[in-house]
Image 1: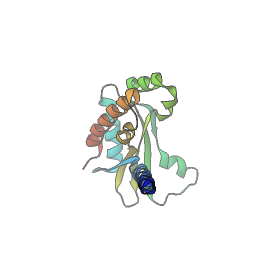
Image 2 (image 1 turned 90 degrees about the vertical axis):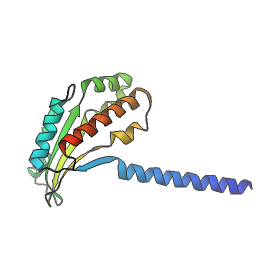
Image 3 (image 1 turned 180 degrees about the vertical axis):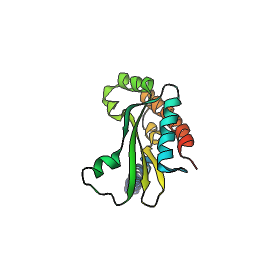
Image 4 (image 1 turned 60 degrees about the horizontal axis):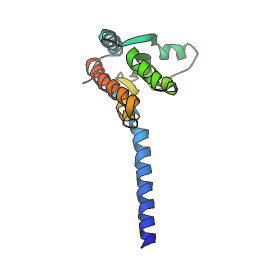
Length: 159
């Protein structure tokens, strides 16, 4: 009887660990296909972030594709990529004041990339999923950011 309970508990633990690993591997990034071309998607991202009260792009967009092709790297899957650093200073301040170790999450990084086939995507960390792992200040800020991110995506790329 005790052996059966222990084996059941072990089996359940293994299943939960595998499920958790699967979710982390497949859901860590949020990827949205854009209904617009590369330049239009980039312009819409810049516009919606800058026009939203309290939000901004504190660092100029990084032309990742151009940067690496200038260093003689070749891409086999993409033909364009820009990385954006999206920030809400009020949220950033709350996170840093809560615990400065979380500064590494700031600002939020978003990528707009175009595949060789012409499809354009917006990629970012799945803050909504991450927020579920935290409570208190960090969880609340991440949940609020996740909601705003979804609003941004609807304006930027959603089909």
